[in-house]
Length: 396
Image (cartoon, rainbow, N blue to C red; front, side, top):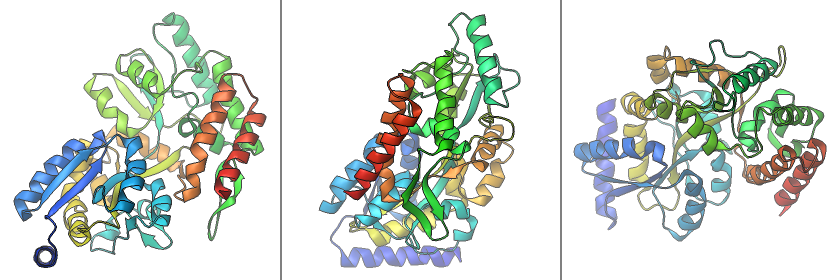
């Protein structure tokens, strides 16, 4: 079967070379997390098949906007590597090419495939799933807290013991992605999930549950656990320097903590209260194909017969250790304690919506949370206004 696949790839390359004057080169845009491994894999692919792979680093937050600008003009990368929640917006703009069913597709988790599906078609090859979790420094925290009440108590003790030189708890204080677990845990939601898909007219970010979650978050600020200015960079730096005891972050960050020599552990985000779990977003990372690319046949074969294989997916995991989207790769690493911790967290999670309307949510919610943590609006006021803003942007 593998021989047939490779034969098909070779035939495709021949057809490609006969029917196109374009150079046989695949261009990939990806963030710093994947650039090194994709460059190595690109060299491996070139050595086997004689096709060059040019990997270009693009800051993660710029990949989608740059692609939205370049792809309609027939420019930009043949492949982009990014998050599944980009899919709806890119498909609606006609910029993604569907990925056909392939031999090993049943080896991929349905959750990961569903995340990259839109309108019944698969628009991305998933390689990793992710959800944020509690990451703690074992030098300060022997037994991680099981509830938010316990987290607050533990953080206060550490703050007092180290007189501010070590923060008991820090995370991004006003970023929706990091606050979402308390909002969803108490019953808030972004768009109502229905049997026929997400109902974007039903927004659950100002419900009593969402308000209760944000009030709990504000308590962390009011009691001196979090500072309004705490952000991702502060959290990440403090933890790497051994100056933070507990943070909430994702699997993309742990390699740097390991490299820094931090004695860390990973576990679920503490329950909001007894039997009320926090519910983080679950995201999926993957490869998406430019619908305007002149190299689509070659690109599809590159992804299906080279990237999607167990061996290549394992190499990507080793370089960028997140929860593998391929079942047999996860089986290889299931005893890794980091994987165990993040898997438990993801099992409580909510899939991030991949509809285009999600683009209206992030800014509105970040603005609302900024107002709340800085004491400039109540949770009720801020969330109500955020929902109005989201509705207005969706109608445009």
